[in-house]
Image (cartoon, rainbow, N blue to C red):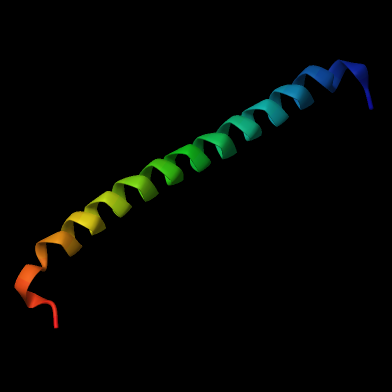
Length: 50
């Protein structure tokens, strides 16, 4: 490995880790939001339940 490219390689890895980490966080937050919305929807069924 050429030492002059080490900064570029490190930056590329850090950016990839940041992007993948951000996608994981966004997916996790969306999952929590959808679970809450589904729980409210199920709570509204009321007399429709068999």
